[in-house]
Amino acid sequence: MMSSTNPLRTPTLDFIARLTVDVASPWELGESAHGQRRFIAITGGDVAGEQLNGRILAAGGDWQTIRADGVAELYARYFLETDDGERIEVENTGFRHGPASVMQRLRDGEAVPPEDYYFHTAPRFFTTSTRLDWLNRTLFLGSAARTRDNVIIDLFAVG
Image (tube, rainbow, N blue to C red):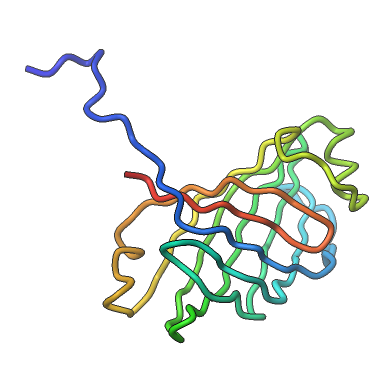
């Protein structure tokens, strides 16, 4: 019989790649019953790592809701294309929040150290590539940072 006090297995995180997602200025929809809604178009970018390399296609975007408590709920969908020409669909959800003064600095386009705020994502990947099929059956975590022109995501596979 297993004890409920001993974990079955502690997950590990294996670095896969850094995604540098180029983004446009936000389109503000305004205040809704769920919070402030906005859309940010994805305009391109790069993917660089030992297990995944390529580019981010200029298609897709990030639909955001800024809740009354200041938490940004993120829902992004876009495509990657590997150096070999294989396409991968990305569906990425996450949260970004921090002290009001820090979040204001981000909105103003200032460089803010990523350790000053919380920004993590849970991406899912979909591909028809047999070589990259492992993406379809692996959980991932992203550690992210926002700059003036892009979102940087360090992608980790959960092992």
